Image (tube, rainbow, N blue to C red):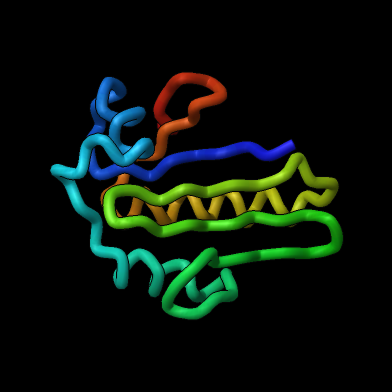
Length: 108
């Protein structure tokens, strides 16, 4: 089972769906800056999915023109939780708002 979070440039819950579905392309993010911020902990080149993996645990980060998708499995290790929280904090430091679609709310 995968769990997703979205980093979006606007804090408007009505726009999250259209942004992640590619229907709202009015706002852009700095893809190079976001990828560079995640390169500290995540592996990957300048294109494609950035990955953190340990044992059976994973956290993947996809940086798109309008948003960032963070995906992880339910995991077994506590270190994965640290990686997820670091990913969320990185998005916030970059000025993105983090939407949790499972809860239907923003991360504080």
